[in-house]
Image (cartoon, rainbow, N blue to C red; front, side, top):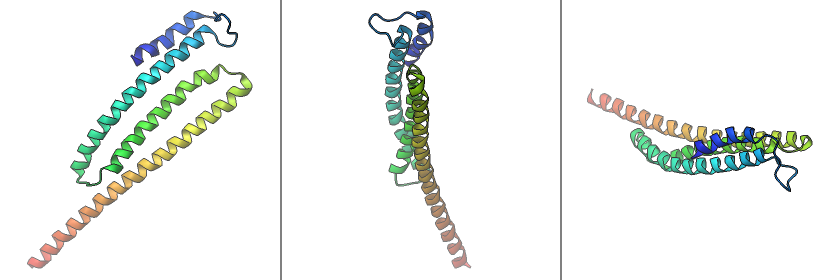
Length: 159
């Protein structure tokens, strides 16, 4: 469904041309249809990403069990952070056509602010993902170091 609405967004507005809606002087009909199609596309993509969260939880559980890590909350949060990054990118992309319809004095600062806010949130989420992955690798390395130390101690006790 998201693909269908995306295709509607691409092909219908150019076909509408400069037809103005009755009683509305600001928004062209093509812009209104494009906006509605983008909203429906976003709704379906967000629902798909919600389903993706469930799948990411299952895959994270499998991955965590294979690594031998007992704590499951951190890897799940990292997977959710990745999904949030995708949502932020989609929302920011969907806002650009809407912002483009505004007056030039408002359009440029609002576009810049949208990009910087999205970038800041994405950088925070990437930092959080990195911190979580660092903790996972650190715990696994400590576990491996402990097992190697035990093996070394067993070897020395046999001699």
